[in-house]
Image 1: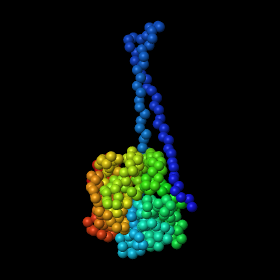
Image 2: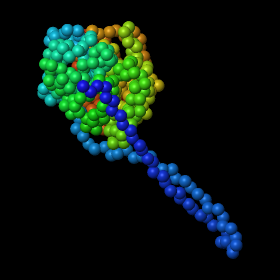
Image 3: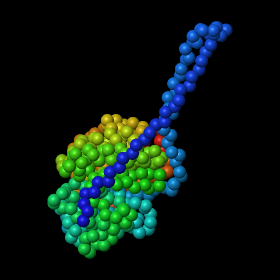
Image 4: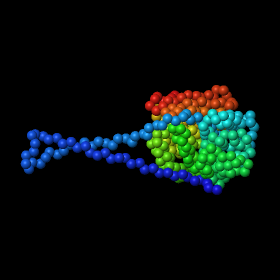
Length: 357
């Protein structure tokens, strides 16, 4: 089977060159025969900025998102995993969401085809018709150790012929392969952070792919979002610190004014202020959601970075969002089990308006 295809893309953008406007000013009553004319005064007009393509009105985009889903040998429908899987499956079946974004770590701890079929499918399989996924390091995919997630998502594991939504549209997608997908006036990029752990040179190369991809989408008038597993904007836990090696990706995201990021990994929930690539809260920054409350055991925070404005670590559930065609969006964390104190909802207005809290 094909594995680890990396989609590459390049874009070349040419700026037009503006001609010179020349004005000549005669001094005195005119030139006498043989007299050298006064030099002309020259004004160089800079080229105008590249125009943003006019936005075409589009319907709202309704998504659900969560990562870190199913525990080892978990099949209990009343478990946190079972309750989350059932709730999102109902949204899919009732056509109340347009996409379910799987933020990585689908099945613990070292899954192969049989594990996805026996454990993940009974609780979460109903989400596949709307599922857009990224592979995470270790639990989803580690080269030479467990490499069946891409086969499972393409319906190639015996006993689970259903394909994820993106595979229905694109065919086989290898573990780690980047891809992008437009939802209304929003452009989503899906990146596997596993490369920063297993192949940093390849992760650096994907930075160029990301830059080209976001450039084209931005010029097409799209609002931008990025999905990846290991978070950059996050609090530490005893198990994981923030993924600082992702900084080249973060620089490119802020360069193009990515509006929204979604990640998992930490086994809790967090939301940042609109933040730039220097950890500063700014009006044109990225709102970073870290949603790893899919069902696996939760972890406490061990520090308090200033860019995190909302977090909790004792509640399982998932994030629902509505993305508008003007770049604004609203969110609501849907609690399915655990502490009732784990709540978060709000709205971020369109570009040019003040940032949310």
